[in-house]
Structure formats: structure tokens, C-alpha cells
Length: 257
Image 1: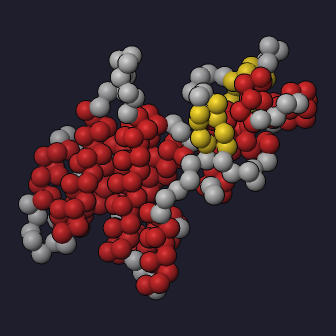
Image 2 (image 1 turned 60 degrees about the vertical axis):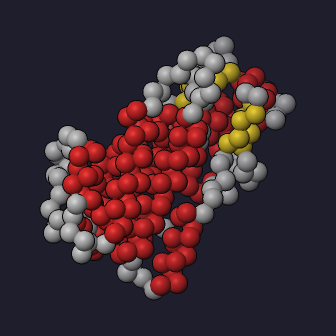
Image 3 (image 1 turned 120 degrees about the vertical axis):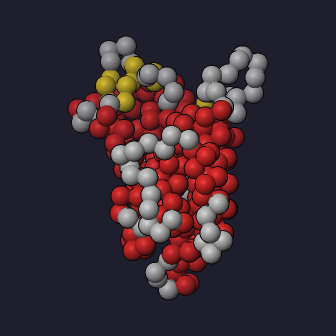
């Protein structure tokens, strides 16, 4: 799906803008699915800046702020875009700017640190950001698709359909909702989603609902350690290493239900 979006949008918009837009969306989506709510919130800014350049291109005859130049005042620029000629499609001139303004407000004006006793809004904020991001992508593609209508409609429907999260947390215990993942993949996914620096084997087994700690350690963790996907310490702490993180990021899209 993403590759088709890239292919069609690059016919209309500069390659660097399309790549920046979709790469930032993938980053948001990855973090959202694996329950990293704060990164999903914070990285919305990259998506906003890429989108602004796309709609600048559409509104101002192909002119846009270079990638190498920062947009100093996001809201002033969004207001300037809204003043574009009325011959420009309303989605470029009005609807998309107002939507991404909401993302930027959340990113900039919501603190990531919360007082004890406050309800933490990170998940709700991340849900808002991913929903708006998917709507923006769907709208850009709706206006610029280059494949048969029925195929384009299917792609847009799939993009905005409700996605089942891969991990559900209840009372501090994480459950992986795709029962078809191998134990190896479940382990790496749980480590990737872990907010602390490491995970103990006992905690891992509880999350996996797997009682045979010896089997997990001897047949899975030791092998993952040799592959340098994880670092397994003598006191049964498991640290996820960069190759393990990359494995999750490369495969999570195939793990979704």
C-alpha cells in the first residue's frame, strides 16, 4: 500500500517531499502499534512539516520551503496557505491545514511530563495523531491516485480502517494479540515495547503466558543473544540491541492482524 502511495504521489509532488511524508507516517505508525505513545506524539511534528511542504507545492505553483530550511512559524504558514486563491482545492487550502494544525498543537503544547494524579493523555493524543495522519494521507491520495478507481478506493479504505493493536496491556501485564507470531517474534516485540531499559526473564514469561523459563532461556534467548538481537546478562536481564530493534521495525507491518 505505502509503495503504491509513493509511486502515485511522486508523479505530482517532488520525490523528497513524498519520501519525507511517508517516512514520518511510518515512524508514527510503528510507534503507535507497539504502544510507544510518547514518541508517536512527538514525531507528529515531522509529519506536519512534510505535509505543509506538500500543500505549499499544491497551493503556490510548485514553490515550497526547502527541506534544508526550517519553517519558523508553523501556524503563520498554515494561515498563509488558507489565504491561497480559491481556485485551489479546499482540501489543500483549508481542510488539511486545519487538521495538521491540531497535530502540531498536541505536539507543542501538551507536556510529556505529567503530575502524579493526572490522567496520562499520551495514548489518547497518539490516537488523535495517527487518525489525522491517516486521513491526510487518504485525502492526498484521493486527489492524486493514478491507478483504477476500485483499486484506489480499496487502498484508501484499508489505510483508514481500524487497526488492531498488537499489544494490549492490563494491570501491568502485556499480551500479544496476534496468536500466530512465533515465540522469537513475541519476545522481540515485547522487548521493543518495554519502556524500561531491560526486561527480566520472569516478567517475560508472565507476559508470554509461558511457564517453562528454562526452555525460553536455553532455546530462544541464548540464540537471540548469539545473533546479537539481545544482550542476556548473568542475572537474567534482557536488553534489546539495535539489530533486534531493526528486526521488529522491519517486520511489524507483517505481524498486524
